[in-house]
Image 1 (cartoon, each protein chain N blue to C red):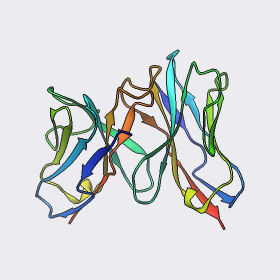
Image 2: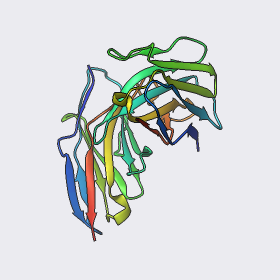
Image 3: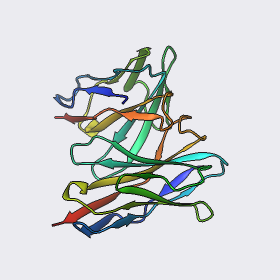
Image 4: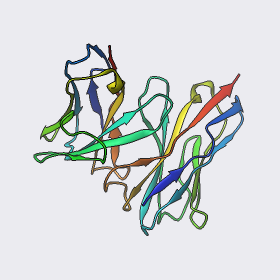
Length: 117
Length: 116
């Protein structure tokens, strides 16, 4: 069975600093997709970044980058130059099947990030 | 980009009444929609998978007679919480599968249900 583990219930970071949110996963599928979502207090799920299991390079989207270490089954999210608006819950999720469109997403428990001014 | 409109965003209802939550894909056809439930400070738990024109597939432990899902068109899926009780109070959020995108999923904005 697929599983996502986020071991950091909460994290603090100083504004303008970088922060890494940890995510490890477990799957027996050779192809899979990994996602990070941001959920502010309003509740909406905001897509941040996607990494396919066969992607050769780590995904990057603006200030977000994904540190993908396939052998270690980890997909940590790095947020550079933190902003106050980054304070939110962050969820790591995965799906079986390359391309991210086969079945439902499985979520980790989330990490609450608080950015200090 | 793909947009999923979810309504209502908040609803308060009396115990014993039913509440309908709608999720509508605005600019794409969503063959499959997923319904999640989220308790405060917890993760999203899949309740059911809704496929257009067929019966929904419910996750273990989810009462299909209590949480009625209808996916009658390629752009609309509804979740009806029947005979709601205070323990049904939660945040419900839908996600549509967008096969045009590598990223695959677009979420609605969620519905915060409070049963009094």
